[in-house]
Length: 373
Image (tube, rainbow, N blue to C red; front, side, top):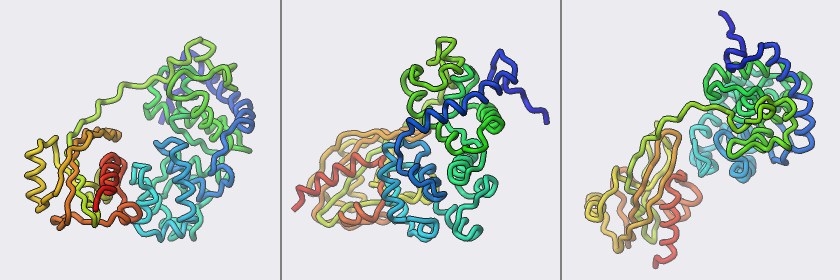
């Protein structure tokens, strides 16, 4: 199989040898900058394999500041692979509540059980064996292998792709699989063998701070500005180049916050698909009128003492956007309809995992609780 030259993959008017020369000049100034300027993050204090792994899974598609409190709480509750493997599903989901992308937590536990069965409870010090675990793609395996075990393999994420897109002034679609593979090949052949973890983290740190995705890059403070073709050409903000995203599908829903002094009405989602197996406020498709919401409550056998329209809310998933109307139904007593459950106020806060998509309605329910007799 013929390997396509990197100058074709990155669409560059320079020879492949020059691309390798530029990449080989990146590690020294970047690592020096990282060791002086790296943010103090909890998972960097002790890069033990389990801690690194949990942090990397949490950080996928989630901001660092949002992850910090979840990370600390998760490690306190589940301090090692064995504890994670044995954790009840409701506890795991509650620990993850609000982080989103809940399949990450399920794969985390599935992999923990694989580690218990195959590797005696210890993450294997092998990129290939890590790649064979649930939830481990090339990035996660590369990050854990390099940071926790010092194995010289790349960890190519969006930050790394953005940095190299600018350093090389590549106008190829940064999200194209061929570009990701080309970047990985370039890093594999030019990364330092003695500190691969620092190098991978330095690239991520640069992309998260100075060479950031939103707003112009801070080239004046960048340790790579003397190498960066985009900066030297005077147009760093022109990179990276991305193909236009497909428009998200919009779905309209009416959410029912049905409450009583005893608790809140919840319903479990299907075990497959979006937000699989989590608990939600009951809802119906479309934005229902006042008459339609009353009819639906009647069908469920619910006779509210008071009924209020709630402020609309919106939640964006990767490929779909929910636009939600809401109704608060305050009852003296609730007999749960088939397929629903009345959970106590304490259980809703400590046991049942309600996704952040419903947070506006959960807050409304908790506020209304204060006025209940």
